[in-house]
Amino acid sequence: MNYATLEHAGKPHKGKTTDAEKRLVREHLDEINERLTAEGLRTVSLSDAEHVERYGLEDLVREQETREPETSDREAADGTAPAGMTAEPFGDDLASERNDRTSSAA
Image (cartoon, rainbow, N blue to C red; front, side):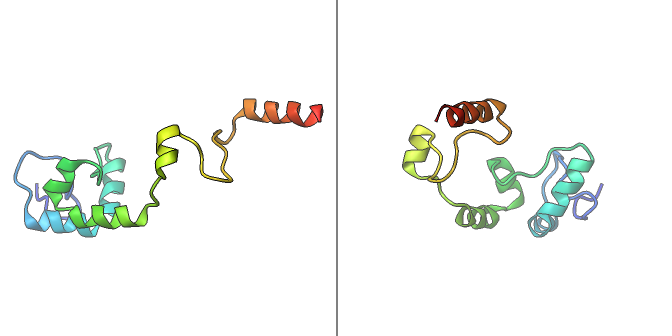
């Protein structure tokens, strides 16, 4: 199997990852991950240190880190939602009921 083609790049294998496969994965990561998902295989993850090293994805990780907003220290420590945001998930029926009871009591 030739892993240096879009058809096979990124598939799990025990052999050496060639520069050509690394380049394909870096340049077509989303496309390759869509194919891997459709084939029922694990995807290439920028949060997996082994994948980052195997495919030379360090630059993509740095790009992703600069694009993602950082969570404030307070939010990380106590789990509070940012200003104007609710900590309750969408579709929480209990939250709706609590809001209804609060509104009717006023």
